[in-house]
Length: 225
Length: 196
Image (cartoon, rainbow over all chains, first blue to last red; front, side, top):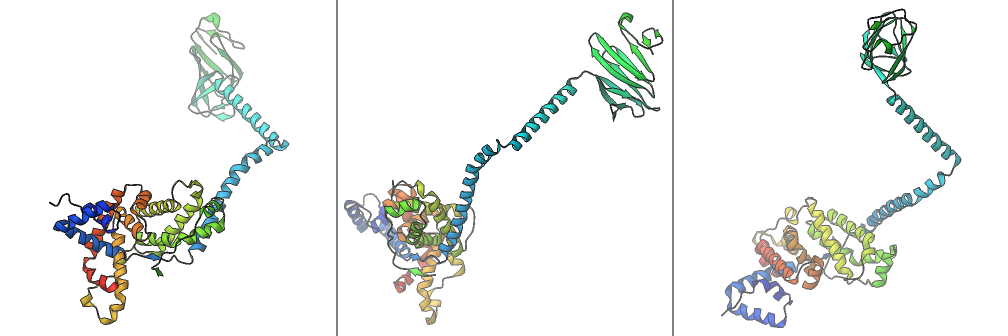
């Protein structure tokens, strides 16, 4: 008799948002359906309260405040675009200035020399050196307990210091106090040390014919001073 | 705060919109004057009557409008586009977790029988405040259709356009909104006659 309930259409019915046909269906249904009628009364009450809503005047100061924020926003955007657009052209202009070009060339040269020096230093063959006593020097720097002696570097001991050099994989050389030794060369088939002053003792495991001692008094059973 | 019973119809044509898109400050002022009260009212109802919050959100909305009006292609009504900005700004602001005082917290409503005759003149205002408090306590998805219907005077179809949903959904949400208002304000049923 009552057909489908119309509760979902009641607000639209109140607001005249239904087609004439749908509105008449709702109206007829409401006559006979107490449940929908009660709901309709509730919706109508809500509508009457909602109709109390009205418009308020915005504060007069709103426009002035808005302009301040708008100007700040525009300034920020202009600043951003200015930086974004101006910087590349400034850079392009500056790169052709002689002074700027000289600075850049110097920096590139310095970087290149630094890289070459570092590469050479790192790639130079070197021997391991152990500190035995005192503070021996490698170059002008005091060595740690374990350091490396590269080709061309001097190892120097004072009157209380001593050091031991590992000669590749074929032996060891002990450097006595008050000595100065330089690594001249190290290759798979040849290793050279120069003794500028003092005394060193070497223990080498190699055929005697492969060992050449300059300015050394006497070789003896594989070891020599 | 001045409450307006009649909504002024804005005179904003395509020319004004185009001038705004060109960055014309005067055109923007026209636009602002035409819509500021509507935007402010929606914000005010959304933030429990907090005038400072409503002013701040209104400014944010117009700043957004000014900076993004170039994106308006005229594919929908300008007011629909504006209302979307308003709804999104209000909902976003609430999602940030700020809490605004409700009308009901500062203006408790008394029953008629408890009032002395000298208080009668305040009844209309108190009724209005109670309605605002009830509105601000609605969930946003029920509050926005109510505000767009009763403050902006939009049709169901226009509300559906703004909210990006169907007319049926608008009808359903308004149903829930009306029932919530009736339930929360049932004790003021008698005041409606006095207020009318």
